[in-house]
Amino acid sequence: MEPRLALCGNVFRADSAQQALAALHGPVAQWRRQLAAAGYAAPPGYGLYLSAAAAAEIRHDGAQLALLQQAIRAAGVVVWTANAFPVGGFHGARVKERAFLPDWRSDERLQFTRDVAEILARLLPAGSSGSLSTCPLGYGPEARAAEPAWDRLQRAHDFLLDLERRSGVRLILALEPEPDGAFERAGALCAALAQRLYRDLAPPQRRVGLCWDLCHSAVVGETPQELLAAAEMHGIPIGKVQVSAALHAREPGAAPAAERLRALAEDPYFHQARGTRHDGRPCAFADLPALLAAGDVARARIHCHVPLHRRDFGAGLRATDWRAPLRRARQAGIQDFEVETYTLPVLPADFLEREGMVGTMVAEMLACAGALQA
Image (tube, rainbow, N blue to C red):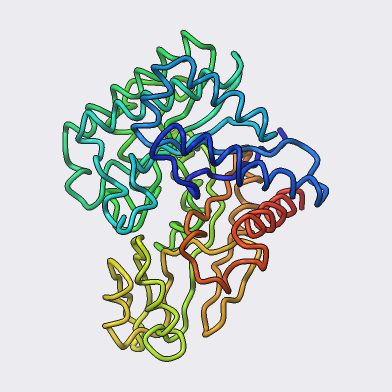
């Protein structure tokens, strides 16, 4: 099957239905026009992002849903996936661990997921398929062991099966491993899903699976071969691949790399890091300030989503390779891909194209589409 490629909408604010619609009418439509001018003829995919407040508003108001459908058509994009990871405030002054909250121990997380799934099913024709991504139960190990989290995940799974019976739309709820999340490696997540949710359920009936974020895998050092083998062994569906790149830094504690990294440390997001000390020992840091304070790190892989079409960001900072994992995903038969560089609004200006955020998104989409065709 031909691959599907989307732009993840969490790069835009969507704390209300009005903000979500404004993104479609403004920068998304502009992005679509510039793609068309560059020769990208087919309507591109758009990964819908709605906060919990926006999703509840649209799900329960037919007029708002109609406005969303109109905005999608007017923008010239198609929607088959959604991002249901951040519940809200994703473009606030301080995000960090709040991106995970409330987590799967909360009824609010379950309701948010149901709302987004219901909206996505109404946007898709009967007989089609899609996905929505979510947090890996929570931040830190506590959520991993919490029975209420697994109970709510089971209820979400049952909801998706019921939604499929009602709508004819098959959706995968895709948990996204992240450094320092309850699950940071896909292998552990796949094993846990098989044990906790799927002991007596055949693979064709499984609706909770994996969102493979290439940036996150690069940071924690999980290879495509390891991830794909785990998913196959445990029978876990892969909802989508988020095409993203992390930063690789040589001598991150020394100038000039440290100066660039200190600037990134001031943005709203977590920048977890994994690396190697000068004596060869591995090391891990919850955020950039801890990495910079360590002083004896030779190399580090940093959770900072950077533009896909660039490889070198100066000062010894380079993008991790996303092309080889993407090729491996296609060889494995994965169909759905989503460009996710939500950091664009806060990255240094020289990380972006001269045309700014929209021009950078165009360049990323063209690079990713070219890699998929290759």
